[in-house]
Amino acid sequence: MKDLLLYDEFLVVFLVVFLVVLGIASFAAIAMSVLLLRKIRALSEPKKIVAPSVKAHHPFRGGLLFEPTVAVAEAGHSFIYPANILTRRELASDVVFTLSGSSSSGSYTGAALPIAQDLGDKAVLNLRASDAADDRRFMTLNIIRVPRQSGTLIKILMIGDSIVNRDGARLLSESLHELGFDSHMVGLLKGMNAGGLSDGLLSEGRSGWESGDFTFAINDRALPVAEGEEAGFLEMGKGGRVPYNPFIRLAKPDDSADLVRNGYVFDCEYYQARFNLEAPDVVINALGTNDARDRSTSKVYDCIYDNDRIIHSQIRAAWPNARIIRTLPATAIASARNKLWTYSYARIIRAMRASAKDLGDPLVSVAPLWAMTNPECGYEVPTNNIGNDGFVIGNWADPIHPAGASQYGYYKAMAPYVGAAALGLLDNGNCASRDQI
Image (cartoon, rainbow, N blue to C red; front, side):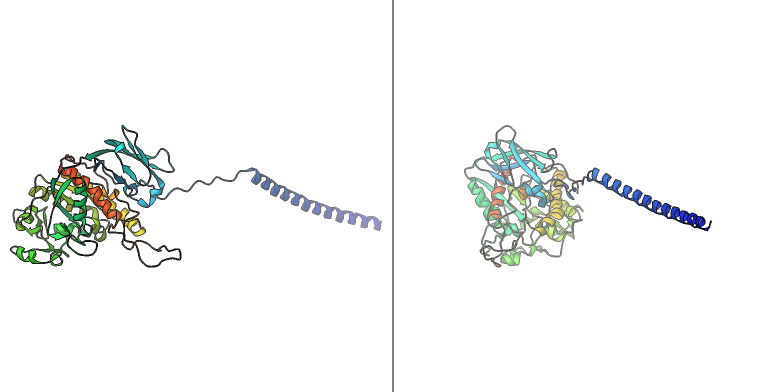
């Protein structure tokens, strides 16, 4: 009997142990099944598709910077460098640029678009985002071809800064001579040649000046020539003349308040009479480079817009038949200048266009020369840090002032505009619709 009880106890213990082991094994089997099932499901599901990254900046964002009327020599051609049409020109590699004739076979694609004879008188400027076949911008260009002249005289007043001062009047005159024009330059300052001598042709190219220095909206640089001190001013050499503003006079009680700046008025009739100058046929306003330097990005648009309004309306009051060409030289491709291009130069160009449009003067034209000179060359190069391969390593020594090819190209592209203006071919204006800031 005792043996039977022992056997029963053993059997109970055995069953308990067996059930425990069975439970553990079942739990392990279930856990293993779940794990395998998850792995099988993971293997059977495709990897998630990663969406392509979205570009932080669209190449057309901020608007484009060009004008639909282009003047070229009848027997020659000019170029469009479309990187400078973009507000963010560092994105030029993201754009396909094309220029094609509207009723001819001429067609060009690339970073330098020739305004050649085979385009005819109408051409389509076509910009496409390189990664979007259907994202395009179009502008139909009206190409004015300037016929060669036989000594047609043009009297020209150039208003500008150091870029004009650096022999701009002579280079423009030479380019006009190639078109058959005889130019007579008006102004009080002789241009400075490449050797640093101021023995060039006359203009009002005043180094360091911005548009507000001429209107006297800014009075921390320019000095007025006092009434009766004209002879003393003319006796000065160029260095003595540069700080003085010969255009301004003390405001009078009957002057319109919207012309008076810091007690003075920009007055072209007064300028001409007091210095016994000839009335110009064409006035070129090429200011803006130093506005980009000195005016904040929040104010540069308004400064250019208002100063252009004053300068151009006062030119018209003094010289009713004078043609006015508003333009702006470009700047080299460089990271710092690219940033300034986006936040200052582009706003300056938009203000120029808007001011000209709102003035409603049919004899004012905007010449898009900022996009007609090559921003990748023609600026001063460094002379040190020569590598083992013989190449100089570095960036532009001066990315602001055109030199060499871009300087010559700037005035070669300008000359047909001046000739077309003098011949009345640009009358009725060529201003595009007003841009938003």
